[in-house]
Amino acid sequence: MAVYVYAVTLDDHPCRIDGISGVGAQAAPVRVVPADGLRAVVSDIDEEIRPKRRDVAAHQTVQNRLLADGTPLPLQFGYTAPDDDAVRQALREQGGMYRAALERVQGCAEYNVKASREQDHLLREILDASPEARRLNEEILAGSQDPRLPLELGRLIAEEVDLRHAAAAADLVGALVPLGREHALHTPSGEDFLNLSLLVPFGDEKPLLRAHAELTQNSDSGLAIRLTGPLPPYSFVP
Image (tube, rainbow, N blue to C red):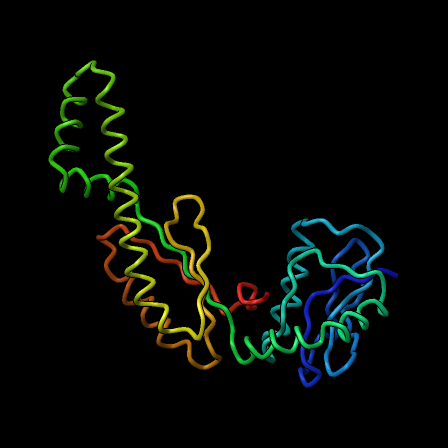
């Protein structure tokens, strides 16, 4: 029977997964397949697994349970193998890679930082700081029908937004990166200008939490910084 693979751990990880059901309509119990000093955490499946809400939640539940007792090597949602023998073979053949990856993240969790600026606040800031943007805006508000004005104002504002976002991102990266063992920058989405992941040793998260609190104290800046964690170290798995 095919198996869904959640994570790989060293053989000394407790893997307290009793009573946890896995992904799929049948939701088979989560169990361990050991080989060559490693453990793969799996569950049986008899269907193609798609990222439905229930299955994504089940996948994350397993990761969180494992993380509570030590750092697992989390696999992305959807990883499957034909059967237990294929899992054992992968653990044996790729054991060096798995051990190196586990050594890299051992004793750590991932913390993710996303940052955005309140758009109205940012626009007011740009208009206050840029005489040219202010002039264009005033002419538009006064009823000018010149079609070039909105285009020019939009271009100028977009350039200023990019510059200010880049500067704010650099400041945050400079302040936060030293608080982790490693970091990974991801492409921001939506209104975010920063998506930063930090690999933080267990017990060393207080400086990060304190820095986040200090950075978010000034609500007048329109800056929103969201800190999520501890998380399985997905961003640091090769």
